[in-house]
Image (cartoon, rainbow, N blue to C red):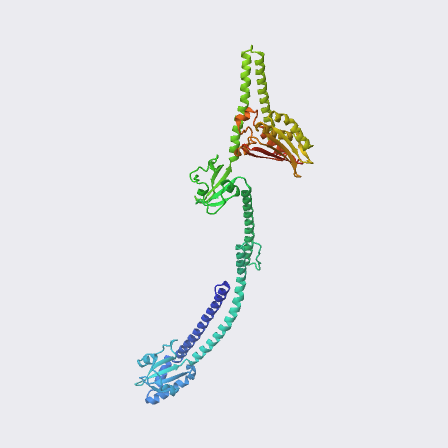
Length: 587
Protein backbone atom coordinates (compact mmCIF):
# COMPACT_ATOMS: atom_id res chain seq x y z
CA UNK A 1 0.00 0.00 0.00
CA UNK A 2 2.73 2.44 0.98
CA UNK A 3 5.02 1.46 -1.88
CA UNK A 4 3.58 4.22 -4.04
CA UNK A 5 5.02 7.71 -3.71
CA UNK A 6 1.51 9.15 -3.50
CA UNK A 7 0.61 7.23 -0.33
CA UNK A 8 4.02 7.89 1.16
CA UNK A 9 3.54 11.63 0.74
CA UNK A 10 0.05 11.41 2.27
CA UNK A 11 1.42 9.43 5.22
CA UNK A 12 4.31 11.86 5.70
CA UNK A 13 2.04 14.90 5.65
CA UNK A 14 -0.47 13.27 8.04
CA UNK A 15 2.29 12.23 10.46
CA UNK A 16 3.78 15.71 10.24
CA UNK A 17 0.49 17.43 11.06
CA UNK A 18 -0.28 14.88 13.79
CA UNK A 19 3.15 15.39 15.33
CA UNK A 20 2.72 19.17 15.27
CA UNK A 21 -0.70 18.91 16.93
CA UNK A 22 0.56 16.52 19.59
CA UNK A 23 3.51 18.77 20.37
CA UNK A 24 1.27 21.85 20.47
CA UNK A 25 -1.30 20.07 22.71
CA UNK A 26 1.40 18.78 25.04
CA UNK A 27 3.00 22.18 25.30
CA UNK A 28 -0.41 23.82 25.91
CA UNK A 29 -1.32 21.42 28.74
CA UNK A 30 2.17 21.80 30.19
CA UNK A 31 1.93 25.57 30.04
CA UNK A 32 -1.50 25.58 31.75
CA UNK A 33 -0.20 23.31 34.49
CA UNK A 34 2.87 25.49 35.04
CA UNK A 35 0.65 28.55 35.08
CA UNK A 36 -1.43 27.08 37.87
CA UNK A 37 1.64 26.11 39.85
CA UNK A 38 3.22 29.53 39.38
CA UNK A 39 -0.07 31.22 40.28
CA UNK A 40 -0.30 29.14 43.49
CA UNK A 41 3.23 30.15 44.52
CA UNK A 42 2.55 33.79 43.71
CA UNK A 43 -0.61 33.85 45.81
CA UNK A 44 1.09 32.17 48.72
CA UNK A 45 4.11 34.47 48.56
CA UNK A 46 1.83 37.52 48.34
CA UNK A 47 -0.21 36.58 51.40
CA UNK A 48 2.29 34.96 53.69
CA UNK A 49 4.79 37.68 54.02
CA UNK A 50 7.01 37.97 57.05
CA UNK A 51 4.70 40.69 58.43
CA UNK A 52 1.67 38.45 57.93
CA UNK A 53 3.35 35.62 59.78
CA UNK A 54 4.32 37.94 62.69
CA UNK A 55 0.74 39.19 62.95
CA UNK A 56 -0.55 35.66 63.12
CA UNK A 57 1.90 34.76 65.88
CA UNK A 58 1.18 37.92 67.94
CA UNK A 59 -2.59 37.88 67.59
CA UNK A 60 -3.03 34.44 69.07
CA UNK A 61 -0.59 34.77 71.98
CA UNK A 62 -1.94 34.17 75.53
CA UNK A 63 -4.81 31.94 74.56
CA UNK A 64 -5.35 28.24 74.93
CA UNK A 65 -4.48 25.90 72.17
CA UNK A 66 -8.07 25.63 71.07
CA UNK A 67 -8.65 29.32 71.15
CA UNK A 68 -5.36 29.96 69.35
CA UNK A 69 -6.37 27.57 66.56
CA UNK A 70 -9.77 29.23 66.25
CA UNK A 71 -8.25 32.71 66.21
CA UNK A 72 -5.76 31.64 63.52
CA UNK A 73 -8.64 30.19 61.52
CA UNK A 74 -10.57 33.42 61.75
CA UNK A 75 -7.61 35.48 60.62
CA UNK A 76 -6.93 33.16 57.65
CA UNK A 77 -10.61 33.28 56.74
CA UNK A 78 -10.17 37.01 56.29
CA UNK A 79 -7.56 36.26 53.61
CA UNK A 80 -9.69 33.60 51.89
CA UNK A 81 -9.94 35.71 48.74
CA UNK A 82 -6.20 36.40 48.25
CA UNK A 83 -5.47 32.77 49.16
CA UNK A 84 -7.97 31.48 46.59
CA UNK A 85 -9.83 29.42 49.14
CA UNK A 86 -12.66 27.56 47.44
CA UNK A 87 -14.06 24.06 47.14
CA UNK A 88 -10.76 22.80 45.80
CA UNK A 89 -8.39 24.77 48.01
CA UNK A 90 -8.57 24.85 51.85
CA UNK A 91 -6.45 25.99 54.77
CA UNK A 92 -5.83 24.07 57.98
CA UNK A 93 -4.37 24.75 61.41
CA UNK A 94 -2.19 21.87 62.51
CA UNK A 95 -0.47 21.07 65.76
CA UNK A 96 3.26 20.72 66.13
CA UNK A 97 2.98 17.01 65.24
CA UNK A 98 0.84 17.64 62.19
CA UNK A 99 -2.44 16.83 63.89
CA UNK A 100 -5.54 18.66 62.73
CA UNK A 101 -6.82 21.50 65.00
CA UNK A 102 -9.03 23.63 62.81
CA UNK A 103 -9.57 24.65 59.20
CA UNK A 104 -11.83 25.73 56.39
CA UNK A 105 -13.01 22.17 55.73
CA UNK A 106 -13.21 20.07 58.85
CA UNK A 107 -14.30 16.88 57.06
CA UNK A 108 -11.18 16.90 54.90
CA UNK A 109 -8.98 18.05 57.72
CA UNK A 110 -9.56 14.85 59.68
CA UNK A 111 -7.98 12.80 56.87
CA UNK A 112 -4.95 14.90 56.06
CA UNK A 113 -1.74 13.09 55.25
CA UNK A 114 1.71 14.17 56.16
CA UNK A 115 3.12 15.43 52.88
CA UNK A 116 6.71 16.43 52.29
CA UNK A 117 5.91 20.06 53.02
CA UNK A 118 4.07 19.13 56.28
CA UNK A 119 7.06 17.09 57.44
CA UNK A 120 9.32 20.06 56.74
CA UNK A 121 7.03 22.32 58.79
CA UNK A 122 7.06 19.83 61.67
CA UNK A 123 10.82 20.14 61.56
CA UNK A 124 10.56 23.92 61.71
CA UNK A 125 11.07 24.67 58.02
CA UNK A 126 8.69 26.24 55.52
CA UNK A 127 7.40 23.51 53.15
CA UNK A 128 6.78 25.19 49.81
CA UNK A 129 7.76 22.52 47.31
CA UNK A 130 5.26 22.30 44.45
CA UNK A 131 5.77 19.76 41.61
CA UNK A 132 3.88 18.86 38.46
CA UNK A 133 3.89 15.18 39.26
CA UNK A 134 1.97 15.55 42.53
CA UNK A 135 -1.79 15.44 42.47
CA UNK A 136 -1.96 18.41 44.82
CA UNK A 137 -0.38 21.78 45.58
CA UNK A 138 0.34 22.65 49.28
CA UNK A 139 2.20 25.04 51.51
CA UNK A 140 3.14 24.39 55.18
CA UNK A 141 4.36 27.32 57.33
CA UNK A 142 5.48 26.69 60.95
CA UNK A 143 4.29 29.26 63.61
CA UNK A 144 5.34 29.71 67.22
CA UNK A 145 2.63 31.21 69.41
CA UNK A 146 3.80 31.57 72.96
CA UNK A 147 5.33 28.27 73.82
CA UNK A 148 3.26 26.22 71.36
CA UNK A 149 4.12 25.39 67.78
CA UNK A 150 1.50 25.46 65.06
CA UNK A 151 1.46 24.82 61.31
CA UNK A 152 -0.51 26.85 58.76
CA UNK A 153 -1.26 24.41 55.95
CA UNK A 154 -2.74 25.35 52.56
CA UNK A 155 -3.84 22.38 50.34
CA UNK A 156 -5.13 22.53 46.74
CA UNK A 157 -6.29 19.17 45.28
CA UNK A 158 -5.74 20.34 41.61
CA UNK A 159 -9.24 19.25 40.62
CA UNK A 160 -9.77 22.53 38.80
CA UNK A 161 -6.47 22.08 36.95
CA UNK A 162 -7.33 18.45 36.17
CA UNK A 163 -10.76 19.45 34.86
CA UNK A 164 -9.21 22.17 32.75
CA UNK A 165 -6.62 19.77 31.39
CA UNK A 166 -9.33 17.27 30.51
CA UNK A 167 -11.25 19.97 28.74
CA UNK A 168 -8.12 21.06 26.87
CA UNK A 169 -7.33 17.45 25.99
CA UNK A 170 -10.84 16.99 24.62
CA UNK A 171 -10.51 20.14 22.55
CA UNK A 172 -7.08 19.06 21.31
CA UNK A 173 -8.37 15.62 20.36
CA UNK A 174 -11.25 17.18 18.47
CA UNK A 175 -8.88 19.55 16.75
CA UNK A 176 -6.55 16.64 15.97
CA UNK A 177 -9.41 14.62 14.53
CA UNK A 178 -10.74 17.35 12.30
CA UNK A 179 -7.21 18.45 11.54
CA UNK A 180 -6.29 14.90 10.47
CA UNK A 181 -9.34 14.68 8.24
CA UNK A 182 -8.47 18.01 6.69
CA UNK A 183 -4.82 17.02 6.52
CA UNK A 184 -5.63 13.73 4.79
CA UNK A 185 -7.80 15.50 2.22
CA UNK A 186 -5.32 18.31 1.74
CA UNK A 187 -2.31 15.98 1.62
CA UNK A 188 -4.11 13.69 -0.81
CA UNK A 189 -4.72 16.48 -3.30
CA UNK A 190 -1.31 18.01 -2.65
CA UNK A 191 0.51 14.72 -3.13
CA UNK A 192 -1.67 13.97 -6.15
CA UNK A 193 -0.59 17.27 -7.64
CA UNK A 194 3.03 16.32 -7.08
CA UNK A 195 2.87 12.63 -8.00
CA UNK A 196 0.61 12.78 -11.07
CA UNK A 197 3.34 14.34 -13.26
CA UNK A 198 5.84 11.86 -11.83
CA UNK A 199 3.46 8.99 -12.62
CA UNK A 200 3.12 10.34 -16.15
CA UNK A 201 6.90 10.47 -16.43
CA UNK A 202 7.09 6.89 -15.13
CA UNK A 203 4.52 5.70 -17.69
CA UNK A 204 6.37 7.59 -20.37
CA UNK A 205 9.64 5.97 -19.30
CA UNK A 206 8.04 2.52 -19.51
CA UNK A 207 6.69 3.29 -22.99
CA UNK A 208 10.12 4.61 -23.92
CA UNK A 209 11.75 1.42 -22.65
CA UNK A 210 9.23 -0.59 -24.69
CA UNK A 211 10.22 1.31 -27.84
CA UNK A 212 7.25 3.70 -28.07
CA UNK A 213 8.75 7.11 -28.79
CA UNK A 214 5.59 8.74 -30.14
CA UNK A 215 3.88 9.38 -26.78
CA UNK A 216 4.23 12.96 -25.52
CA UNK A 217 3.67 13.81 -21.84
CA UNK A 218 1.38 16.77 -21.04
CA UNK A 219 3.17 19.74 -19.45
CA UNK A 220 0.71 21.18 -16.90
CA UNK A 221 2.92 23.66 -15.01
CA UNK A 222 6.01 25.82 -15.24
CA UNK A 223 7.60 24.58 -12.02
CA UNK A 224 10.38 22.06 -11.61
CA UNK A 225 8.05 19.14 -12.39
CA UNK A 226 6.90 20.89 -15.57
CA UNK A 227 10.53 21.44 -16.54
CA UNK A 228 11.20 17.75 -15.80
CA UNK A 229 8.28 16.70 -18.01
CA UNK A 230 9.38 18.96 -20.86
CA UNK A 231 12.95 17.72 -20.52
CA UNK A 232 11.67 14.13 -20.65
CA UNK A 233 9.75 14.90 -23.85
CA UNK A 234 12.87 16.47 -25.34
CA UNK A 235 14.92 13.45 -24.26
CA UNK A 236 12.40 11.06 -25.86
CA UNK A 237 12.49 13.05 -29.09
CA UNK A 238 16.28 13.16 -29.11
CA UNK A 239 16.49 9.44 -28.28
CA UNK A 240 14.01 8.64 -31.04
CA UNK A 241 16.05 10.66 -33.51
CA UNK A 242 19.27 9.02 -32.35
CA UNK A 243 17.84 5.50 -32.52
CA UNK A 244 16.39 6.25 -35.94
CA UNK A 245 19.81 7.37 -37.10
CA UNK A 246 21.43 4.28 -35.57
CA UNK A 247 18.77 2.06 -37.15
CA UNK A 248 19.31 3.70 -40.54
CA UNK A 249 23.05 3.17 -40.25
CA UNK A 250 22.47 -0.41 -39.13
CA UNK A 251 20.15 -1.04 -42.08
CA UNK A 252 22.72 0.47 -44.44
CA UNK A 253 25.41 -1.79 -43.01
CA UNK A 254 23.13 -4.83 -43.13
CA UNK A 255 22.22 -4.06 -46.74
CA UNK A 256 25.88 -3.52 -47.56
CA UNK A 257 26.94 -6.78 -45.88
CA UNK A 258 23.99 -8.64 -47.42
CA UNK A 259 24.68 -7.65 -51.01
CA UNK A 260 28.42 -7.20 -51.06
CA UNK A 261 30.30 -9.84 -53.00
CA UNK A 262 33.11 -10.05 -50.46
CA UNK A 263 32.59 -12.17 -47.38
CA UNK A 264 32.57 -10.60 -43.92
CA UNK A 265 32.89 -12.59 -40.68
CA UNK A 266 33.15 -10.90 -37.27
CA UNK A 267 34.32 -12.59 -34.08
CA UNK A 268 34.30 -11.37 -30.48
CA UNK A 269 37.31 -11.35 -28.16
CA UNK A 270 36.81 -15.04 -27.33
CA UNK A 271 36.69 -16.07 -30.98
CA UNK A 272 32.91 -16.67 -31.08
CA UNK A 273 31.22 -15.56 -34.28
CA UNK A 274 28.86 -12.58 -34.06
CA UNK A 275 28.16 -11.90 -37.73
CA UNK A 276 28.59 -13.56 -41.11
CA UNK A 277 27.07 -12.31 -44.37
CA UNK A 278 25.66 -14.61 -47.11
CA UNK A 279 28.78 -14.19 -49.26
CA UNK A 280 30.93 -15.54 -46.42
CA UNK A 281 28.53 -18.47 -45.94
CA UNK A 282 28.93 -19.38 -49.61
CA UNK A 283 32.70 -18.99 -49.59
CA UNK A 284 33.18 -20.99 -46.37
CA UNK A 285 30.39 -23.51 -47.15
CA UNK A 286 29.03 -23.03 -43.63
CA UNK A 287 25.73 -21.60 -42.43
CA UNK A 288 25.79 -19.00 -39.67
CA UNK A 289 25.38 -20.47 -36.20
CA UNK A 290 26.04 -18.78 -32.82
CA UNK A 291 28.07 -21.82 -31.77
CA UNK A 292 30.67 -21.30 -34.50
CA UNK A 293 34.15 -20.02 -33.65
CA UNK A 294 37.06 -18.82 -35.75
CA UNK A 295 38.69 -22.22 -35.16
CA UNK A 296 35.69 -23.93 -36.75
CA UNK A 297 35.79 -21.74 -39.85
CA UNK A 298 39.57 -21.37 -40.14
CA UNK A 299 41.10 -24.40 -38.38
CA UNK A 300 44.55 -23.76 -39.86
CA UNK A 301 44.59 -20.01 -39.23
CA UNK A 302 45.47 -18.21 -36.00
CA UNK A 303 44.29 -14.61 -36.04
CA UNK A 304 46.19 -13.83 -32.86
CA UNK A 305 49.57 -14.58 -34.44
CA UNK A 306 48.81 -13.49 -38.01
CA UNK A 307 49.88 -9.96 -38.91
CA UNK A 308 46.62 -7.99 -39.25
CA UNK A 309 48.52 -5.15 -40.92
CA UNK A 310 49.39 -7.35 -43.90
CA UNK A 311 48.12 -5.35 -46.86
CA UNK A 312 48.39 -8.35 -49.17
CA UNK A 313 46.05 -10.49 -47.07
CA UNK A 314 46.39 -14.09 -45.96
CA UNK A 315 46.03 -16.81 -48.57
CA UNK A 316 43.76 -19.61 -47.42
CA UNK A 317 42.30 -22.59 -49.29
CA UNK A 318 39.01 -24.28 -48.43
CA UNK A 319 38.04 -27.14 -50.70
CA UNK A 320 38.39 -25.97 -54.30
CA UNK A 321 38.17 -22.30 -53.32
CA UNK A 322 41.14 -19.98 -53.02
CA UNK A 323 40.49 -17.24 -50.48
CA UNK A 324 42.31 -14.08 -49.51
CA UNK A 325 41.59 -13.05 -45.91
CA UNK A 326 42.16 -9.59 -44.45
CA UNK A 327 41.76 -9.75 -40.63
CA UNK A 328 41.47 -6.46 -38.75
CA UNK A 329 40.93 -5.79 -35.01
CA UNK A 330 37.63 -4.14 -34.16
CA UNK A 331 37.80 -0.93 -32.13
CA UNK A 332 37.35 -1.51 -28.40
CA UNK A 333 38.48 0.03 -25.12
CA UNK A 334 39.88 -3.31 -23.97
CA UNK A 335 42.35 -5.58 -25.63
CA UNK A 336 39.72 -8.20 -26.53
CA UNK A 337 37.64 -6.18 -28.94
CA UNK A 338 37.36 -8.97 -31.48
CA UNK A 339 38.39 -9.53 -35.08
CA UNK A 340 36.62 -8.74 -38.34
CA UNK A 341 37.75 -10.78 -41.34
CA UNK A 342 37.07 -9.59 -44.89
CA UNK A 343 37.19 -12.53 -47.29
CA UNK A 344 37.89 -12.29 -51.03
CA UNK A 345 37.17 -15.26 -53.26
CA UNK A 346 40.11 -15.26 -55.64
CA UNK A 347 39.31 -18.66 -57.15
CA UNK A 348 38.37 -17.16 -60.51
CA UNK A 349 41.43 -14.92 -60.45
CA UNK A 350 43.57 -17.99 -59.86
CA UNK A 351 41.83 -19.78 -62.69
CA UNK A 352 42.21 -16.75 -64.95
CA UNK A 353 45.86 -16.49 -64.04
CA UNK A 354 46.37 -20.16 -64.84
CA UNK A 355 44.35 -19.75 -68.05
CA UNK A 356 46.42 -16.68 -68.98
CA UNK A 357 49.63 -18.60 -68.47
CA UNK A 358 48.27 -21.55 -70.42
CA UNK A 359 47.04 -19.21 -73.14
CA UNK A 360 50.43 -17.54 -73.47
CA UNK A 361 52.14 -20.93 -73.47
CA UNK A 362 49.66 -22.31 -76.04
CA UNK A 363 49.95 -19.30 -78.33
CA UNK A 364 53.71 -19.49 -78.10
CA UNK A 365 53.65 -23.20 -78.81
CA UNK A 366 51.12 -22.92 -81.66
CA UNK A 367 53.12 -20.17 -83.35
CA UNK A 368 56.49 -21.71 -82.63
CA UNK A 369 55.66 -24.94 -84.46
CA UNK A 370 54.87 -23.37 -87.87
CA UNK A 371 57.64 -20.80 -87.41
CA UNK A 372 60.12 -23.60 -86.78
CA UNK A 373 58.96 -25.42 -89.89
CA UNK A 374 59.10 -22.26 -92.00
CA UNK A 375 62.55 -21.36 -90.68
CA UNK A 376 63.88 -24.91 -91.21
CA UNK A 377 62.64 -25.21 -94.81
CA UNK A 378 63.70 -21.66 -95.63
CA UNK A 379 67.23 -22.25 -94.32
CA UNK A 380 67.36 -25.47 -96.34
CA UNK A 381 66.37 -23.63 -99.52
CA UNK A 382 68.92 -20.87 -98.82
CA UNK A 383 71.72 -23.29 -97.96
CA UNK A 384 70.99 -25.63 -100.88
CA UNK A 385 70.00 -23.55 -103.92
CA UNK A 386 70.66 -26.49 -106.27
CA UNK A 387 67.89 -28.69 -104.85
CA UNK A 388 65.75 -30.48 -107.39
CA UNK A 389 62.75 -28.40 -108.50
CA UNK A 390 60.29 -31.02 -107.22
CA UNK A 391 61.84 -30.94 -103.71
CA UNK A 392 62.06 -27.15 -103.71
CA UNK A 393 58.41 -26.95 -104.74
CA UNK A 394 57.46 -29.35 -101.95
CA UNK A 395 59.40 -27.25 -99.41
CA UNK A 396 57.71 -24.07 -100.61
CA UNK A 397 54.32 -25.79 -100.38
CA UNK A 398 55.06 -26.72 -96.70
CA UNK A 399 56.15 -23.14 -96.00
CA UNK A 400 52.91 -21.85 -97.58
CA UNK A 401 50.76 -24.26 -95.55
CA UNK A 402 52.51 -23.32 -92.29
CA UNK A 403 52.11 -19.62 -93.12
CA UNK A 404 48.39 -20.21 -93.75
CA UNK A 405 48.19 -22.01 -90.40
CA UNK A 406 49.81 -19.04 -88.65
CA UNK A 407 47.43 -16.70 -90.46
CA UNK A 408 44.43 -18.78 -89.27
CA UNK A 409 45.73 -18.67 -85.70
CA UNK A 410 46.26 -14.90 -85.83
CA UNK A 411 42.85 -14.41 -87.46
CA UNK A 412 41.15 -16.49 -84.79
CA UNK A 413 43.01 -14.60 -82.05
CA UNK A 414 41.93 -11.27 -83.54
CA UNK A 415 38.34 -12.52 -83.70
CA UNK A 416 38.44 -13.56 -80.04
CA UNK A 417 39.99 -10.21 -79.14
CA UNK A 418 37.13 -8.36 -80.87
CA UNK A 419 34.64 -10.60 -79.08
CA UNK A 420 36.32 -9.91 -75.73
CA UNK A 421 36.16 -6.15 -76.20
CA UNK A 422 32.71 -6.12 -77.78
CA UNK A 423 34.04 -4.74 -81.05
CA UNK A 424 32.86 -7.54 -83.29
CA UNK A 425 30.60 -6.08 -85.97
CA UNK A 426 27.51 -8.23 -86.43
CA UNK A 427 25.56 -7.88 -89.66
CA UNK A 428 22.10 -8.50 -88.27
CA UNK A 429 19.45 -9.55 -90.78
CA UNK A 430 16.43 -11.81 -91.01
CA UNK A 431 17.23 -15.04 -92.81
CA UNK A 432 15.91 -18.55 -93.28
CA UNK A 433 17.27 -21.29 -91.05
CA UNK A 434 16.32 -23.79 -93.68
CA UNK A 435 18.48 -22.18 -96.36
CA UNK A 436 21.39 -21.54 -93.99
CA UNK A 437 21.55 -25.19 -92.90
CA UNK A 438 21.22 -26.42 -96.52
CA UNK A 439 24.18 -24.18 -97.35
CA UNK A 440 26.19 -25.74 -94.50
CA UNK A 441 25.16 -29.22 -95.70
CA UNK A 442 26.29 -28.50 -99.27
CA UNK A 443 29.59 -27.02 -98.04
CA UNK A 444 30.46 -29.93 -95.75
CA UNK A 445 29.14 -32.79 -97.92
CA UNK A 446 32.37 -33.11 -99.95
CA UNK A 447 34.50 -33.18 -96.78
CA UNK A 448 32.22 -35.84 -95.28
CA UNK A 449 32.48 -38.03 -98.38
CA UNK A 450 36.27 -37.76 -98.23
CA UNK A 451 36.02 -39.45 -94.82
CA UNK A 452 33.39 -41.89 -96.12
CA UNK A 453 30.83 -40.41 -93.70
CA UNK A 454 27.09 -40.33 -94.14
CA UNK A 455 25.94 -36.72 -93.72
CA UNK A 456 22.21 -36.38 -93.08
CA UNK A 457 20.15 -33.17 -92.98
CA UNK A 458 16.76 -33.34 -91.29
CA UNK A 459 14.67 -30.16 -91.07
CA UNK A 460 11.19 -29.85 -89.60
CA UNK A 461 8.42 -28.36 -91.68
CA UNK A 462 7.79 -24.60 -91.65
CA UNK A 463 10.98 -23.56 -89.85
CA UNK A 464 10.70 -19.86 -88.86
CA UNK A 465 13.10 -17.17 -89.92
CA UNK A 466 15.73 -16.02 -87.46
CA UNK A 467 17.19 -12.60 -86.76
CA UNK A 468 20.97 -12.43 -86.38
CA UNK A 469 24.30 -12.46 -88.19
CA UNK A 470 23.88 -15.27 -90.73
CA UNK A 471 27.59 -15.49 -91.52
CA UNK A 472 28.56 -15.87 -87.83
CA UNK A 473 25.79 -18.37 -87.06
CA UNK A 474 26.76 -20.37 -90.12
CA UNK A 475 30.38 -20.26 -88.92
CA UNK A 476 29.28 -21.83 -85.62
CA UNK A 477 27.39 -24.68 -87.31
CA UNK A 478 30.23 -25.30 -89.79
CA UNK A 479 32.71 -25.49 -86.92
CA UNK A 480 30.58 -28.04 -85.04
CA UNK A 481 30.01 -30.16 -88.17
CA UNK A 482 33.71 -29.97 -89.09
CA UNK A 483 34.66 -31.27 -85.63
CA UNK A 484 32.20 -34.14 -86.01
CA UNK A 485 33.75 -35.04 -89.37
CA UNK A 486 37.30 -34.85 -87.95
CA UNK A 487 36.70 -36.91 -84.83
CA UNK A 488 34.46 -39.58 -86.30
CA UNK A 489 36.21 -42.67 -87.70
CA UNK A 490 35.76 -43.41 -91.43
CA UNK A 491 32.36 -44.68 -92.35
CA UNK A 492 30.62 -42.75 -89.60
CA UNK A 493 27.23 -41.10 -89.51
CA UNK A 494 26.67 -37.37 -88.90
CA UNK A 495 23.20 -35.84 -88.57
CA UNK A 496 22.16 -32.17 -88.77
CA UNK A 497 18.62 -31.36 -87.59
CA UNK A 498 16.67 -28.24 -86.68
CA UNK A 499 13.30 -27.29 -85.22
CA UNK A 500 11.73 -24.43 -83.25
CA UNK A 501 9.87 -24.18 -79.94
CA UNK A 502 8.34 -20.80 -80.82
CA UNK A 503 11.00 -18.77 -79.05
CA UNK A 504 14.28 -20.40 -80.03
CA UNK A 505 15.65 -22.03 -83.15
CA UNK A 506 17.20 -25.32 -82.00
CA UNK A 507 19.97 -26.83 -84.12
CA UNK A 508 21.38 -30.25 -83.27
CA UNK A 509 24.52 -31.92 -84.67
CA UNK A 510 24.95 -35.59 -83.74
CA UNK A 511 27.68 -38.05 -84.65
CA UNK A 512 28.79 -41.56 -83.69
CA UNK A 513 32.44 -40.64 -83.36
CA UNK A 514 35.07 -41.21 -80.69
CA UNK A 515 33.23 -39.10 -78.10
CA UNK A 516 34.57 -36.87 -75.37
CA UNK A 517 35.46 -37.84 -71.78
CA UNK A 518 32.99 -36.41 -69.30
CA UNK A 519 35.65 -34.50 -67.36
CA UNK A 520 36.72 -32.66 -70.54
CA UNK A 521 33.26 -31.44 -71.58
CA UNK A 522 33.22 -28.30 -69.28
CA UNK A 523 36.52 -27.14 -70.80
CA UNK A 524 35.67 -27.64 -74.48
CA UNK A 525 35.09 -23.93 -75.08
CA UNK A 526 38.33 -22.81 -73.48
CA UNK A 527 40.90 -21.34 -75.82
CA UNK A 528 43.55 -23.77 -77.15
CA UNK A 529 41.99 -26.61 -75.16
CA UNK A 530 42.19 -29.98 -76.86
CA UNK A 531 40.92 -33.31 -75.59
CA UNK A 532 43.66 -35.17 -77.48
CA UNK A 533 46.33 -32.61 -78.27
CA UNK A 534 48.46 -34.83 -80.52
CA UNK A 535 45.58 -36.03 -82.71
CA UNK A 536 44.08 -32.50 -82.83
CA UNK A 537 47.26 -31.00 -84.24
CA UNK A 538 47.54 -33.83 -86.74
CA UNK A 539 44.06 -32.91 -88.00
CA UNK A 540 45.00 -29.22 -88.33
CA UNK A 541 43.05 -27.78 -85.44
CA UNK A 542 44.09 -24.61 -83.64
CA UNK A 543 42.06 -25.16 -80.48
CA UNK A 544 40.22 -21.84 -80.99
CA UNK A 545 37.25 -22.90 -83.12
CA UNK A 546 34.94 -23.94 -80.26
CA UNK A 547 35.99 -20.92 -78.19
CA UNK A 548 34.95 -18.61 -81.07
CA UNK A 549 31.73 -20.59 -81.59
CA UNK A 550 30.83 -20.30 -77.94
CA UNK A 551 31.43 -16.53 -77.94
CA UNK A 552 29.31 -16.02 -81.08
CA UNK A 553 26.44 -17.98 -79.52
CA UNK A 554 26.72 -15.94 -76.35
CA UNK A 555 26.72 -12.70 -78.35
CA UNK A 556 23.38 -13.76 -79.82
CA UNK A 557 22.10 -14.53 -76.28
CA UNK A 558 21.87 -18.19 -77.14
CA UNK A 559 23.16 -21.39 -75.52
CA UNK A 560 25.29 -24.33 -76.63
CA UNK A 561 25.24 -27.70 -74.86
CA UNK A 562 27.36 -30.80 -75.41
CA UNK A 563 26.45 -34.37 -74.52
CA UNK A 564 28.99 -37.08 -75.22
CA UNK A 565 30.27 -40.49 -74.20
CA UNK A 566 33.58 -42.04 -75.12
CA UNK A 567 33.24 -44.32 -78.21
CA UNK A 568 29.50 -43.59 -78.32
CA UNK A 569 29.37 -40.30 -80.16
CA UNK A 570 28.64 -36.67 -79.43
CA UNK A 571 25.52 -34.48 -79.59
CA UNK A 572 25.78 -30.68 -79.74
CA UNK A 573 22.61 -28.60 -79.28
CA UNK A 574 22.62 -24.91 -80.18
CA UNK A 575 19.76 -22.52 -79.32
CA UNK A 576 19.42 -19.13 -80.99
CA UNK A 577 16.57 -16.71 -80.07
CA UNK A 578 14.36 -16.01 -83.09
CA UNK A 579 14.54 -12.28 -82.41
CA UNK A 580 17.90 -10.58 -81.97
CA UNK A 581 17.84 -8.62 -78.68
CA UNK A 582 21.22 -6.99 -78.80
CA UNK A 583 24.76 -8.19 -78.22
CA UNK A 584 26.04 -9.39 -74.88
CA UNK A 585 29.17 -7.36 -74.12
CA UNK A 586 29.84 -8.39 -70.52
CA UNK A 587 32.13 -11.22 -69.67
